[in-house]
Image 1 (cartoon, rainbow, N blue to C red):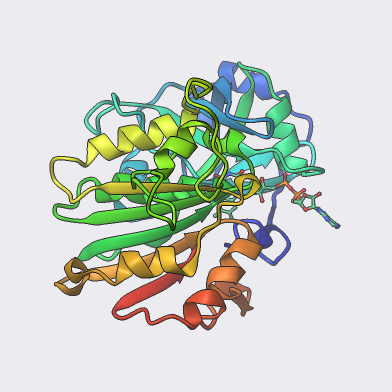
Image 2 (tube, protein in one colour):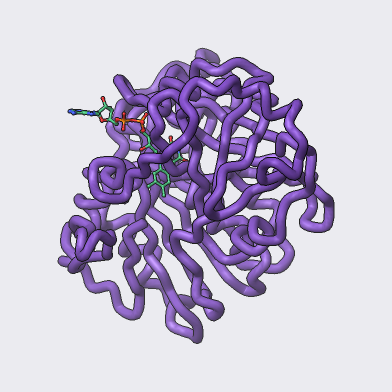
Length: 344
Ligand SMILES: Cc1cc2nc3c(=O)[nH]c(=O)nc-3n(C[C@H](O)[C@H](O)[C@H](O)COP(=O)(O)OP(=O)(O)OC[C@H]3O[C@@H](n4cnc5c(N)ncnc54)[C@H](O)[C@@H]3O)c2cc1C
C-alpha cells in the first residue's frame, strides 16, 4: 500500500496550525468558531475516550466528536462506498497522517446518531505521529479531518479476495462492512501478521489438513502451533487461547453479513509460526466455479510496502499523485481470469 510510503512521497501533509495550542481548550470554544464535526478541509476536535491494547505495538483508539454532534452524512456515505480514511494532526510538529476508521461497532446501527470513530493504530519505531498518538491519555483532544474515499467499490461487486498485512486489516474490515450490505456477495480475507499477538485465537475457517491428510490442522492451531507446523503435543496439554480484539471484531463482521451474503471467510497467517500466504491459497479462491457469474471480482491488497510489492508490484507516483502502476509481483505470474487487482 503504500499506506506507509505515502508519508515519504508528496502526499504527506504539512499543515499550518498554531503549535502548542492546548488541545483541551476546544471543549470550551463555541461550536461555531470551529468545525463541530468532521470536514474534508478543516480540522475538527475529537476526544480520545478509550485506548484498548491489541498487542505490544497496536491499539484500538476510540474517539468521540468533541461537540457530541452525530456522525455526518459524509461518513455514513464513505462507510457504504468502500475504503476511506481521515487525517489526524500532530499540533506541535505540524504534520498530519492518514488513518483508516474501523467499522462501526456491531450494536451501532446506521440509523443511530453514533459519533465515534475507531482506529487500529500501530506504534512505529521512531514514528512521529504514531508515537504521539500512543502517548496520549484518555480525555485528550485529537484533531481530525476527512473523510477521504481511498477506493470506491464498484456497484456490481460480487466477490472480493482481500490480502491484508498487519494494519492493512483496517481497510479489509471496511470492505467487509460495505459488502455486508451487498446481497449475494462473498469475501475471502487472508490476513498475515508477523506475530501471533496481533491475532490471538484467530485460526481461520478452513478445516485444513496436513499434506498427509491425517491431522486436521485446526487441532494444531488450537495448540498454538500454526498452520504449517508438524509438531504435536500430547492430548491434554492444549492451551486455551483467548481471542484478540480484532479477531473478535472479524467474527462479529462475519455474523453481520450472514443473512444477505455468501459470507466473509477469514484465514490467518503468522510469520513466526512459519505460516505464509501462498500463491496456491489465492488460486484456490479465485478458480472456483462460483467465480464465473455476473459482477466484478476484485483482489484487493493492503499492508506494508513490501507486502503490496511482493503480491502486485510497486505503486507509482505520477504528477504528484500515487497511481496503481503495472501489475507485478506474484499475481503478475498467475492466471487471474476475470479478477481485477487493486493495490490500496
Ligand atoms: C490512506 C492511509 C491509511 C492509513 N491507515 C492506517 C491505520 O489505520 N493504522 C495505522 O497504524 N497506520 C495507517 N496508515 C499509516 C499512517 O498514516 C502513518 O504513516 C504511520 O502511523 C506512521 O506515521 P508516523 O508519523 O508515526 O511515522 P514517521 O515519522 O512518518 O516514520 C515512519 C517510519 O519511517 C521511519 N523513518 C522516518 N524518517 C526516517 C528517515 N529519515 N530515515 C529512515 N527511516 C525513517 C520511522 O522510524 C518509522 O519507522 C495509513 C496510511 C495511509 C496513506
